[in-house]
Length: 109
Image 1 (cartoon, rainbow, N blue to C red):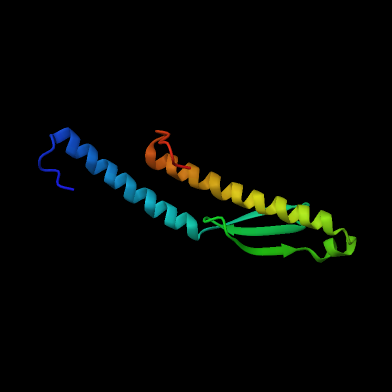
Image 2 (cartoon, rainbow, N blue to C red):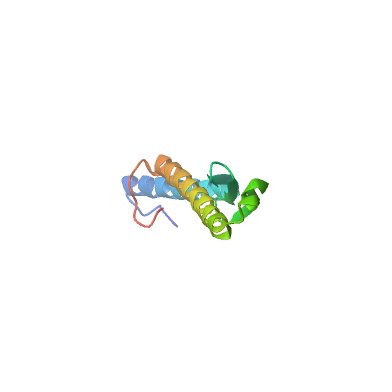
C-alpha cells in the first residue's frame, strides 16, 4: 500500500495496524505449535491438543479399564479434550489481548 498520499497521522496509523497484524499472525503460528493438556478423572485421562485445537495425544491410566465402564471413559475423554481446547483458546485470547491492548476487535477470538 502506498502511504505517500496519506496525511502523516493516517500513514502512522496504517503502519501501526500492519505491525499489529504481523504480530498477531506470528503469535497465532507460535501458539498453534504449542501443546495444551486437559485432564479428567483426577488425572486418569489426559488429552494433549495443540493451539490449532487438534488432538495430538490421549493417555489413559490402565486402572480406568479395570472399571469396565466404557461410558464413563468416553465422558472423561470428552471432558479432558474440551478442557485442553479451552486452555488453548484462553491462551490465544490472552496473547491477542496483549497485542491489541484490549481493544476488543470484532472477529478476533
